[in-house]
Length: 458
Image (cartoon, rainbow, N blue to C red; front, side):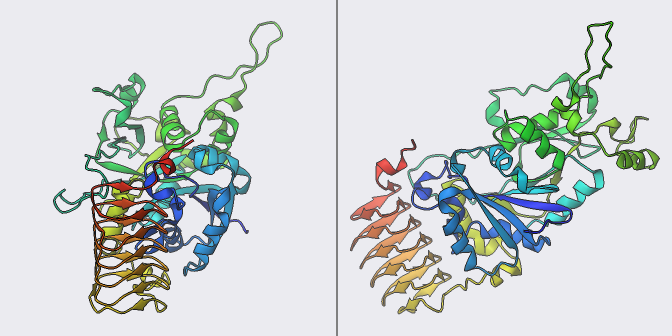
C-alpha cells in the first residue's frame, strides 16, 4: 500500500457497539445496514469525496473477511487496507491506533465508522494546515430529533439521555481549550486557573457534537506509542493534549559533576515530542501573522502544542452508536444524505434480483434476492438481502435485516428485525427490536425480543 503524500486516513471499525448490543449480537457494528448500505460505507465515502485514495480500516480479527466481502459489493474507488486486530472490540480507540502505528508514517486523520455526515473534510484539513496544528477536531451541531410523538425508538419505553459533550473554544483564536463529557461533573464545572489566566474569553458549548473525526500530527502518535497509559482518544488522550497546550516545556539542565543536578530527559514530556521543525519556527517568526490581537505576545503565545476545533455549521452529522440513533439514521437517511454519491453506491433502491409481487410498496429499499409476496403492504422500510415477506402482511417504518422471514398476516410497525429472525404467522409487533435468529409469535409492543443470554457480555 503506497503512502498518502500528506495525510493518511484511519477508520476505526473494530468497536463492538456496547451501547447497542441488541443489534450487534449477531452482526458487527460497522456492517449494520443503514439505508441497506453497511455503516462503514459512509465514512469511507466521505474520505473518498475529500480526495483520499486509500484508507486503513481497523477491524476486529474475526470479521476481516466479512468486511472485505461487504466492501467489494460497493462502488468505492478508495483503496482499503483492512487491518484485523485481536480483541479490537474490547480495546479503546487509542489502543487500536497504537497497535497499528507502524502503518502510519505521516500526519493522519482518524474517523469513526459510525459517523454519518455531509461535512467537507477538506475544511478540517485546511484548518490543520493553516495553524500547523497538533490536533484539529470536527464539531457538529447536535442533531435535532423529531418530537417524541413523531419519532419513537424501538424497544422499552425509557427516556434516553444522549451524552453531552462540553467543548471549550477560545473566542478569539478558535483554539480548543476544554474538552470533557457532562457526565464527568455533578453540578459545577471546575476550570483550571491556568486556563482562566491564559484565555481571556472562551465559550463552553453544550450543543456541539464531537464527531470523532480528528486530524493529528505524527508526533501525537509517537507520544501515544511512548505513553501507554492512554486507552481512549476522546476521553483520555485528547483532553490531556488540550490541557498541555497551556503549559510550557520544563526547563532543561546541563549535567554538572559538581552538583546533584542531572540532565532532564525531555522525550518523556509531551513537549519533547512536539518540538517544531527549525524551518517552521523560522517561518513563523518572520511572518507578520498573529492569531490574537489583544496583546504583544508572540504568535500562538509561543505554544508548540496547538489544538483547534472546526465547527461545521450548516452541515448535518450523527454518530450511530445507540439504538435511538441507528433508528433515526435509517428513518431519515434519504432526507439527510443529499450528496449525489449515495446514488453511486452500487446499491439501487430496489435490487434487480429482488422478487416483488406486490404493487403496494412506498419509499422502500429492497436488497438482493429479497422476496415480497402479493397482497403485502410496505411503506418506508429497508428490506435486507434474502428477506422473505409473505402475503397479507403490513410492514411500515422498519428495518428488516438479511435472511429475515415474516410470515402471513403479520403487522410490523416501527421495528428493527435483526438477521435470521422469524416472525410467525399473525404476529403483531409495534416499536420492537427482535434479535438475530429469534422466533417471535403473538402481540408485542415496546419490547426487546431476543435470547437473554446473547446480551450478556463476558
